Length: 415
Image 1 (spheres, rainbow, N blue to C red):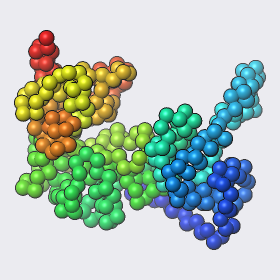
Image 2: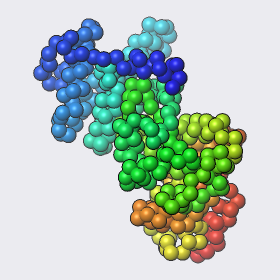
Image 3: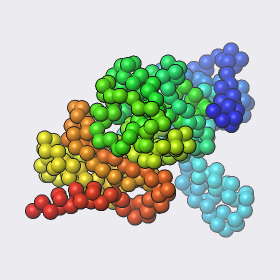
Image 4: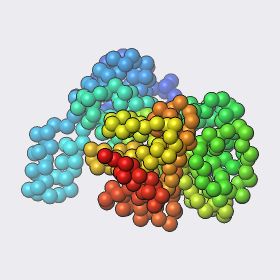
């Protein structure tokens, strides 16, 4: 861990003792929230923040929702005041008029979240609060606006500059390993032995981002297999029977599982930084690594094929490869971006679609979501920046000639 991370950890690990402040208040939580926003004393503010966060986590869902709805409406902006302050700024631009406009345009609930976060250890509780908000909020426009406030603040608090990249190994603390098992979202870890096979051998790596305010909670992690050549089957990577390879003998790093860990940080992007940082670190560690690819699922494939009325048969490997290539290249969302969320992620990072494999994920989940097909996204470290800019500007899906050839076969067979 860097010196900066050590310093930040020291700051964030301050201990807060409830016996130094007033006992629990007991007023309704919404009243406590308003009192916190209006408080001037540090000690009283910490007491209010502690009580709000502690009591919120004990509430039933209906009461959590009621509290969130109340602060969303009570602490909203005043549109008339915003208009008046904007008019004043337009007429007389100055530091004073701009400050008044900025204050009017920011809802008091943002200041509430900031003040709640002054309590040491509060950041994790606020992440859990936003997870409840996302889960319970539905289509309520006030709650959607409150969620944007959380997201705005979290985007700053969880800026890449504050994140710490740590390797996860079989020697990592047990409570961290337990979280890796629990948070794995792509290929389930079925036992401690299964986890050990993914962490202990010399040709396996795992890295996670942590935040100093949540030192025991990974935010996102990636599992990496070091191989010779580009694999086309996840079962081949994870089988118990495989022979481990010395890391120095590998020429390819395969990112085969990327898992976001915190539901309350949805929409806060970590994955692009994680993959690029890990690729750069591995390239520096192992001179023999020349290729950096994923082995990724295609989670929306079968649903899209069914919706489009395209028949598919997982027993026909070449037909599934062609349909998958066609989907990845041509299926679009209403916004014009690739339909597949994993494709959007990797293409947005500057990767290209390199190869499509049939019978690559033979699990029940793999067959259900993609007929067993998987895809390699290739990260050419010399081209990722250029590819990223191209994708952002045009939404063009960049793929290898062999993937284009596969997709063309579907177009040729279309009536």
